[in-house]
Every structure is written in C-alpha cells, then in structure tokens.
Image 1 (cartoon, rainbow, N blue to C red):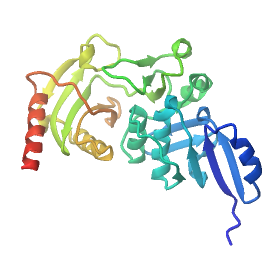
Image 2 (image 1 turned 60 degrees about the horizontal axis):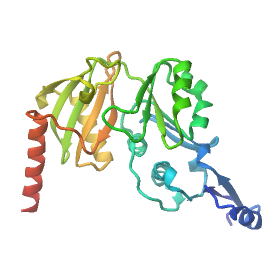
Image 3 (image 1 turned 120 degrees about the horizontal axis):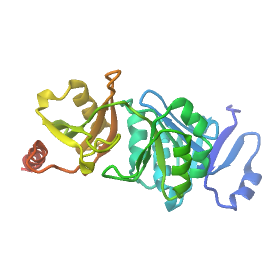
Image 4 (image 1 turned 90 degrees about the horizontal axis):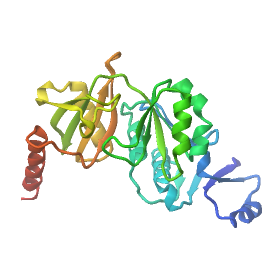
Length: 292
C-alpha cells in the first residue's frame, strides 16, 4: 500500500478552496494554495527549472492551473514544463510568447542565453542580487510580447535596473538574460526544415541591438557561407517549436565562439530584393508541390 503523502498544488485558488483544503487535507493528502507571484524560472538550454517558492514543480503529484487572462502566457509556459516532466495538471489556453518559446527551447536542450523570469514586477525588484550574481552587468531585459527590437533594454547597473522597473506595470512581463558579447548576429530563415536564407545584421547606431528595423546593416550570405553550427542550431530550434516557417535571431559569442538562439519569429520581416524573398518563393513552391 502506498502511504506516501500526495501533493496537490493549486494556483490562483478561489476563496472557497480554503474551506475545501481544510476539509480534505490529511496525512495522505497535502493541498498547497499558490499564487503565480511565487513562480520563478531559470532556463539555460542545459538546465530548466520552474519553481513554486523554493520547490521545483516536479515535486508535486498534480498541479491545478486556475488562471485569469492577465497571466495566461505565464500559465501556458508552466504547463509546458509540467507536460515535459510528466506531472499531471489541468489543461490551459495555448498562449505563445517569447516566454513559452524560451521554455520549449530550454527543455529541448537548445542553446539559449541563461534566462530568468519573475512576476509581477515588485517580485522582480527583489531579485536584483540574484541577477547580479548569475547574469552580471550588463544583462538584457526583454518584454515577452514585443517586436522590432522594442521593449528590449541593456541594463548596466542597479540604478538603471531600478529606474526601468519603476516604470513598468504588471501588464508587461519581462525575461532577464545574460548578455552575449558580439559585433553582429545572424537572421536565418527556415522553411520546411531547410535553411533558405541567411544574413549578418551589423548594428550601426544602436548600442547593442542588431535589428534591421533600428538601422543595422544587412549583409546577405550564401547558404554555404553560414557557419554549420548556426544552421544546425536554427534547424533544431524550429523543430523543437514545430515551426515550419520562421526567422531566427542567432548570436555567436565573440569570445567563446558558442552560438545561442535569441528569438524565433513566426512572422519575420523580409528585405525586398534579397534572398529572403527567394526563400519565401521557395517556401510557397514547396507548399504548392506538397498539395498537388
């Protein structure tokens, strides 16, 4: 007979559940009523951990994911972790964001910069010592719902961190990532599990963002000119995310030579007259051939 106490974690509980907990909890059943403000994430591609307070979610037998619209993106990311680790849980809405992509990439051992997530922002403010120790200055703060390089900040010291977080409200959720030293990054277009286009993006007027929308110089490459490790990383990332058309931002550390996926864009911008247009044409041709 299994005498081990069963542990159930209930997120965002209704007030009435306190009475239910009191009635049902006994030596064989532990019911923990939790808030999403007690969730923390540490993700790196080699190690993935999502915790409630100091307890890894893997230590619970069942997780009840009650939610509201303001946190559906966080809840979906949590559900991915639970599913990967075979922890039974309630189903939830599928809300993709940079956060869910980062969780998926990390769980699939795809190389990403060391990433932390805390929510809401008053909790984030209390984690500065941890971020300073693990990420060091400068580090990146990135909104989990943003595009075109907007909502991305390079944090150089505690004063900048405090200034930024004082302006945020809880509608905006951020990940904090280790900054990868570089002079440029790659934008790789993948379609139907093939690398179809690649370019170097070299920042001109921006301090750290290699984004064409912000004025970065675009240097388009032949497929043979794209480093093999960059191509392989792009293909592994799109496979993990089940994305058959995507633009990937990949950076190579100029000191170590290791490459990391920064973002995966399902609706990447295309530069007219470039190999990206040819890639789009090839992708559509492949679709046409597959349905004939």
